[in-house]
Length: 221
Image 1 (cartoon, helix red, strand yellow):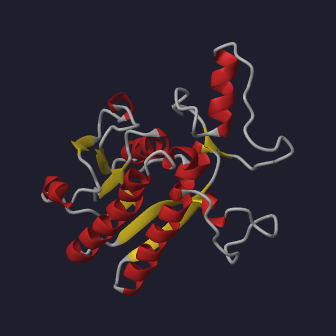
Image 2 (cartoon, one colour; image 1 turned 135 degrees about the vertical axis):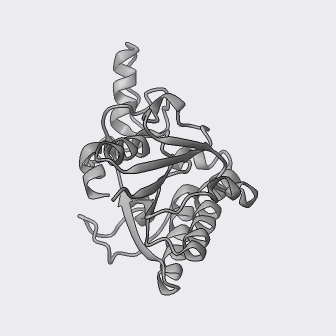
Image 3 (cartoon, helix red, strand yellow; image 1 turned 60 degrees about the vertical axis):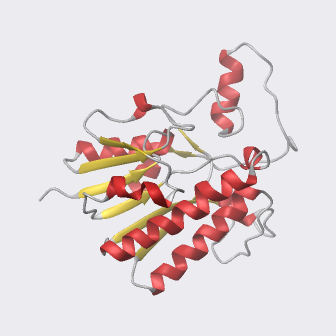
């Protein structure tokens, strides 16, 4: 039996990898993306594409003809640094879109909703490694929006929507956008190397991070 999945942000780095993996196993995949940061060429050929702004309720008629077995919500602005330039756009891309999608899932009785949050919700944690029980102390508009979107997801869990939230951090791999110097440490450093420029390190050089390969993220999703 063929299942139908909605992948938001499927023209982006992680979303396109997930759409590709779902399609490869025979699932029907519908990609919804506004192409603000993603690329149409990233969308697997076998996927159906709906160009739409997920933060605009007037555009949800574009999804009305499909019944989804799950919604994978990866769409949204993906940089903490960039969120300071336009906080409202950041809020709309994360919080408004998540609320609208959750409402759609509840109304249409979609069995599963999976959401891409971020480890940035913790801010500067008191203890490392971070555990899920630690307090969330966002330090960017991006992180604050993720906290808010998670709260809506938790609310809709009580209203009958089966929700899973992934707090991802430092994902790297093929098709990451090397032109974006505000997101993805490995891709940023690699872009400097390919351009023959000195690597610009922002913040304290003594920091350390864990990185996760995009295929492992797709497996988890």
